[in-house]
Image 1 (tube, helix red, strand yellow):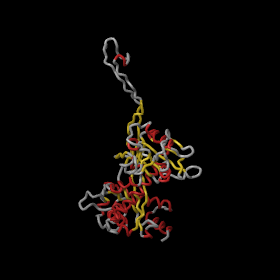
Image 2 (cartoon, one colour):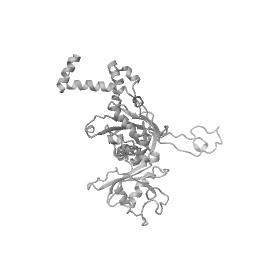
Image 3 (spheres, helix red, strand yellow):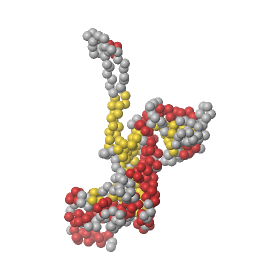
Image 4 (tube, one colour):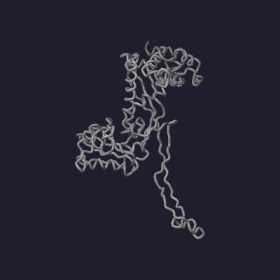
Length: 408
């Protein structure tokens, strides 16, 4: 049936004057009400349940079948979505009836699992920045931390010997405790929605092999982790790229290589951080594997190589490479096509454990439309995985960036 005929029949049935745009608006509004009436349920995928939990492949398979109007194989429909939520009371009777009776199709578009911890824990394997930062759980969209940027001074105060002669304003020398005014500020950590699309074959979802779970977990974690890592590195802070990354935040210690990369450049990068964070436990250095290869040839003023693999002298007990005594962290998401010759990259260093914050508002949310093309025609299902997550620095002076680093 052509679209014009559909509009004609709807006009006859409703008595309204309709066109393509108004028809689209009616359908979108109705679907929006239906979806908002579905109350997501919590589904545990972990081992804390008797029997070891549900398993990601079985969970996603049930999500797909529910979205197609079929009965789930491993969970009841009301275990995935609630069809008796308070929001349904606001729906008109026919809409509520549709949602209850076959109707769980709407639930297939929004099926979350708040306890998918095994997936989110794997994100650190694919986001070098996130794995280094301080993790902050969030119960709301934003957390505001009070900060002190300066103004406090400590004094040695002698014992007051003559309180009758000397009073307020006569100074520390006469036993008065001085006053110092602190400079206060605020640090806001905001959780933003990060949505990534993961395409999975239906055969994989129907496979009951427990090994499939690990494949799917890695697939989701890699997609989310890489997207978040890119944002932490070079996010612009725009509406469609809401996190401002290290490139945009670091200004005080924005350094650059002049000529060939030397030991002095690396020392300057690391100590630019220590000058502002002298009590940092360590200052990890982030770099692309191409920069790592260049660092392997770099020597200090004594002629010793500054890069050490685990087990080598001065890195015997380390579990990762070291650069002049600091951990080196590989990050393949750092750009390597910078500069006029498109053959330059960047190195980052900072007090990540103490001054970089990652806030997580919720667990993993999964949405799907099993009928979406072109995936349906290829016997695939596209899942939209969402997390609400944020990133910020408490003090950009505790971080440094070295640009114009050669890649060869």
